[in-house]
Image (cartoon, rainbow, N blue to C red; front, side):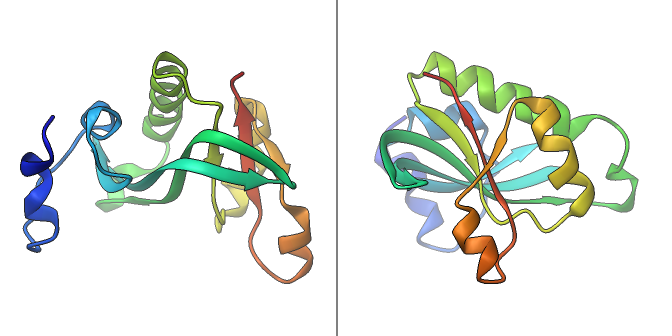
Length: 134
């Protein structure tokens, strides 16, 4: 993908991009759509528990579009897709930022994530999780 194809973002126009579109694109943050889920992703270096990782895929937020979104397995599918593509594109890991949903915070360790940056939680922030891929 060329940068021109993403110029509509700065102009306020909205297109539904896939995660793979984002990973191929010369942009470092973008809203991604998967089925009824909208997620905000970033990519690039990140310090996690004091260790610098050069290539991390961060999912900063995910929201469900519509009331029929719960319990269909779409989040689990999105997470598997995220993990597989991050591995394929050579990322060090996947970071999930500020998990507000208590149910999800309990589920993420089952998907291979560990809670990180606990010092932020001690300051009243929501938990963050990391799945190391390398």
